[in-house]
Image (cartoon, rainbow, N blue to C red; front, side, top):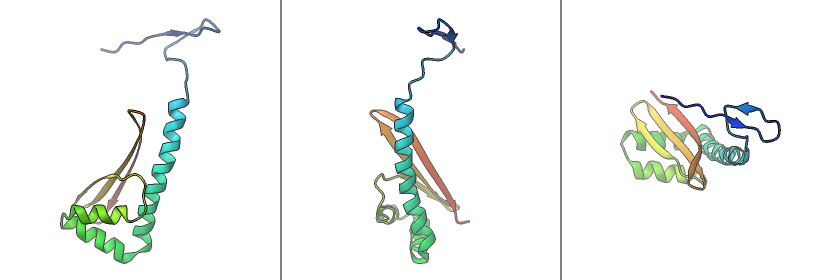
Length: 114
């Protein structure tokens, strides 16, 4: 069941099916997403620029050496640590940030090696 609420615009008297526009959280989410993209970019740059890093990261993940995978990702200089999962096909990093108590943005990278 879906309910549709109409909000009356105080200035024009018109009714619209959405609350008034407030860009505060939207802008905050975008700002935080930019920072997450910078973190994701640091990791991607390290992977693309260093064959030894790439090989060691892939090896650690394939051996389920979570501590080593986390250590290597942290060593790239990121500020927000992602949730990392991996399987035989590749690695996923989910970078998340919050605005107060609300999750406001996610940057998810999924890289395949098989």
